[in-house]
Length: 454
Image (cartoon, rainbow, N blue to C red; front, side):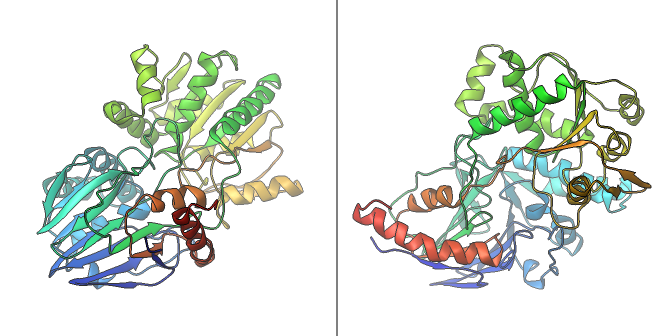
């Protein structure tokens, strides 16, 4: 079997009856948007926004499509959907039912953050609902004249890889691929029909240049050690957490530690309205949890709930948490401390040595989260949104390896399972990560095809 051509940071990829064009995330991580044209039918896969310091303009080519396909509900894949609809798009929007539910919560929150009125946000959600076409995993549907099938991607609940076919071409767009054996989620699909070559695979490469150093067992042990230290100091643990995926994974690990007695029962507050809404959405879609989570549920153990877990819905109750003595855990948005309820907790807790701030995700350069880490290293101060500078005396901890993205080895395993792939278009990774994967992967694929150890 031939080794596919692996092509980094390139927009256009030809097909016999059209082309695949990366309209976003061609040379960066965020802003995924891919236009697939086959036999004069055009489908847009994802419609994301650039985040952090990454930039993108909304492309005109995104408007001239016959359908929109969403791989999952993160803003870097769906954040430009309101712009697309505002500019006249009125065609079907295909996604798994869980993705559609998460997307509505995420987009409504995003519109509010951008200053949209409740009326305008409600109008968009109504329009989104009217266009939405839920599609289960493994079932093939007609998407504007093309064949569309979703396959599990293992990244967040409802995430999917999209397979599109015409009479002459076949394309697979990976979406974001998750780590193997991730809590709650099923592993990414590795079973593909072998009756037809795959002309183009569009594959994410967020971690295309490296392997994750931490296993899920390592993460659980590290979390236990961090929490035991905080409990021994009667400290509050403040966890800035992303509402979609990361908060639910944390709850799963906390459930395991509490139920097994590895940490004492202390109050755990979920102080993020969006995180609460997403967690309830996860519970609605329990049938697509992985076997381990389903076994827990069958035994009467909700993996996202445990004794002393509290939901904080009202803002005034959030403020009252600051008067509660530790030890306790507060999970609040946002993940990089750019806003949300975590700000008030940090302003109150950062000056105290009886606070632990636990970062559970990457803190991008220039974000408040990164500035807190830097201030802690030099014993300095940090200014948070809407407030004065505060001294950072709190203990800063990092839970490494808690990523929802596959590393290069896991990406390779996913790609290796696709039969007769002709061309691989890398995206959703910075230039260095794409180049690293393009240089490393071909020899690994040749070695496995010949039976040699890779």
